[in-house]
Length: 158
Image (cartoon, rainbow, N blue to C red; front, side, top):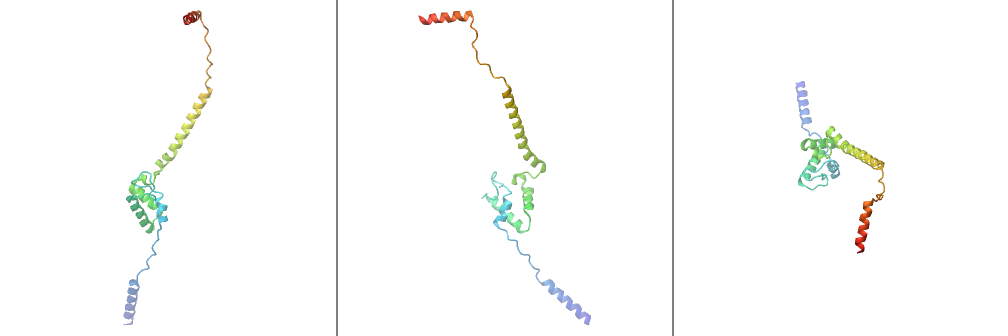
């Protein structure tokens, strides 16, 4: 009988312990600055080249609210950006996430700039090395030229 009472008491205690509310985690407070820190990395899906944190389009308002919810859920900035890239494509970040495309987008303009500089350098060198034009000299007059000139002068006198 004593064992039965101990078993019942332990059962009741365990029910009371399980019935107590588990402590709720403190909610994460997300400020506008937190949302804008993530939104600055993204671009508006509607407006061209408009950063998400400055755009007032309804889609941008929804995206900022989604960022707020994900930050409140404990996701990091990188996870949120990856989420948007996965769902909406590389266009939302402005810089391709694919390593090959990112390298091309960064190295491409540099290669064009270097090639343009070399082309300009060689064009200037070629321009400097060309022989200057000889000053215009009068051609020796021939007897035929002399006869035309004398005839013209006579005609003008008349």
